[in-house]
Image (cartoon, rainbow, N blue to C red; front, side, top):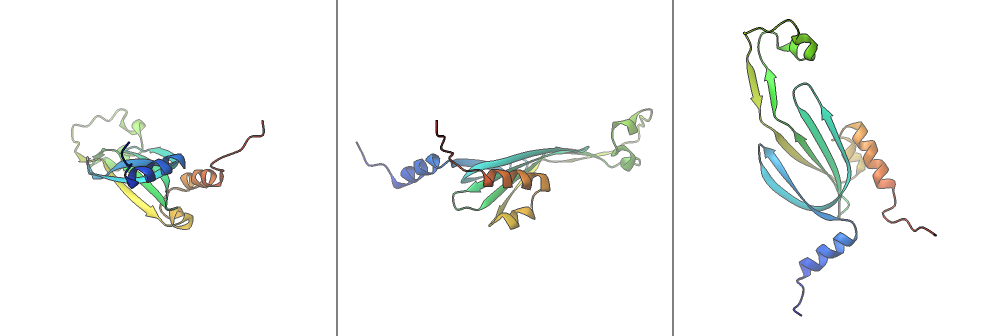
Length: 146
């Protein structure tokens, strides 16, 4: 048998500790790929009138926190009644004006890196932060006396 390259040994050690290779897309549209070693702590989706957002929070093997924030494509009404239509579908009932204009905003995603939990709190929604805290406070291995 040949020698195993050191990088493969480290990757296997990280997998055994619960870390996996994570590849995400960052930037507008398809963007570019970024890769790191981490473990998923929490995920949250928010749906709005114009676009959806997904947050995924990871802990890296260097004990930093990474947040991948994806925003779906948006179709934004820029016509004369734009503000009214942003209040929800009920505003549309009975008002099918031909005088409408729309702007398309492409999907995009961003990667944020936080050195600690205090820095993380500043960049993610409060509900997601609570989920991350719960995950961080759970033991990675629980020994059962059975």
